[in-house]
Image (cartoon, rainbow, N blue to C red):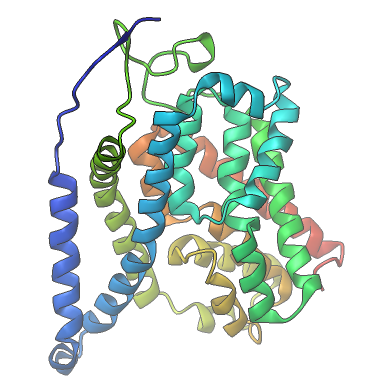
Length: 336
C-alpha cells in the first residue's frame, strides 16, 4: 500500500453555522424574561437547547479529538494486538474497554468510526460504542448518587452489558457495510483512498486542525438532534403520560423518553430519580439503558458518519433487543 502526502482543505462552514446558531440561542435565553410575556415557551426551549448544547459539545469535542489521535498514532498492527482475531473474543475485549472509557454517546460515535477505519471488527466496535456510555465509571457513580442503591446500579450495568453484547454479536450475522467508504476495511486497505493513503499529520497543530475540521463537519448534525430533543421536552409531558399505564406501555414510554430527551448518560439517572414515584423500576431501566445507547442526537451523529442502511439496522436492533431484554427481566421479577 502506497502512502502519499496530501493536504486537506479546511472547510469551516459547519463550525461557523454552529457558532451562529449557538449565539442566537444564548441571545434568546438572555432575553427570556421579555419573551415570556408573549406566552410562548420560547424562553424555556432556548434554556433547554443551550443547556443541552453546552453539555454535549465538550464530550463531542473530546470524542473527535480522541478519534483523531487514533487516526494519527494508532496503527492497524497495534489494533490487531489489542483486539483478538477471534470475532467473539474481540467483542468481549471491547466490553472490557468500555468499562474504562468515561465517555458519553456523543464521544463514542467518532471513536467508533475511527476504530472501524483502523480495522476493528464491526461487532467489537459496535459493542464498545453502545456499552461505553452506559457502563463507564461516571455512569456507575452518578446512578448510585441518584438512587443510593447498588442493586439498582447492578441492574442497570447488567442489562446494558446484555444489550450491548447481543447487538454487537448480531453484527456477525450478515455483517452490514457501515462506513461510506467503498473499500472493504477487512481486506487490507483501511482508509478508502484511491491510489494510496494519506499520511496523517502527527504534529500537535495537525491533530488539532483535523479535530477542528471534523468537529465542524459533525456539529450541525448535533444541533439538529438538539432541536428535535428540545421540541420533545417542551411539548411531551412524560410525567403526566405515565399515570395508569400498564407495564408494556410504561416501558415503551420511558424508552421513547430516553430517545427523545437525549440526556447525557452521566446525568440521566438524576432525571430518572425524579420520575421514580411515577414509573416502576422496569420502566426506569428502559430510560437508563436504552437512552445512552440510542437517542435523537446520537442518530443524527451516526447519520452524518455512516451509511443510512446501517444506521437503520442499528436503531431497529438496539430498540428491539433493549425492549426484549428489559421486558423479560421485568416479567421475571428481577426489576421489581
